[in-house]
Image (tube, rainbow, N blue to C red; front, side, top):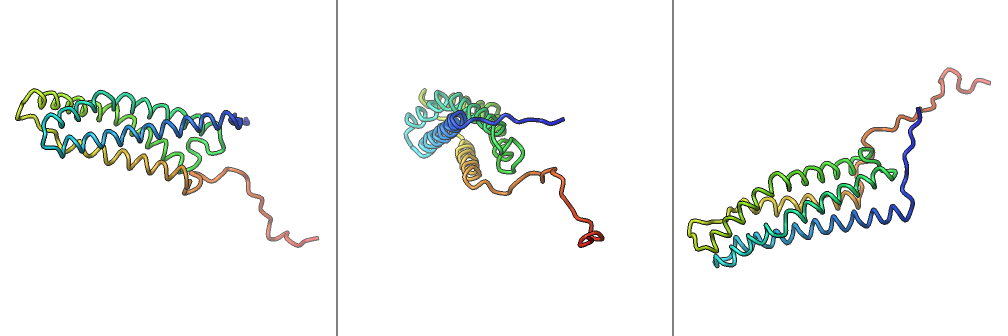
Length: 182
């Protein structure tokens, strides 16, 4: 049974690629803004500034970042299915897919609760609670996430490592005992 893959036409491919690039850029931008706010919150001695900075993360970071990750993933899947690269045909595409899925899950199930807790700490800071302290563990996601996104960008540009599996095309071989026989 022969399977056919439907390839994207030129304009459709460019449109989906544009959505993919823009969503990845938005995701990185949100991550960088989150990083700036965390660094401000951790480095300032002014509790009001720290409280506002850490609370503002909860207002903008999680759902826009998660949305950008999902748009990036869906557009990447469409590009993979609609192009010669496939979803798991090449190592660089498969790794990008794993990174995207993993990071999206981390946003939803790990970062979201941590940011909500940090926002509550920010609220306590603004209320004058001297026991309210922002954990330095907030730095991990703001270092790891942009690094992983930059790795995905590098994979997109350089496309290293080739195919996951060699193609199943039959290899034509000559029988050595018949070579040169007329």
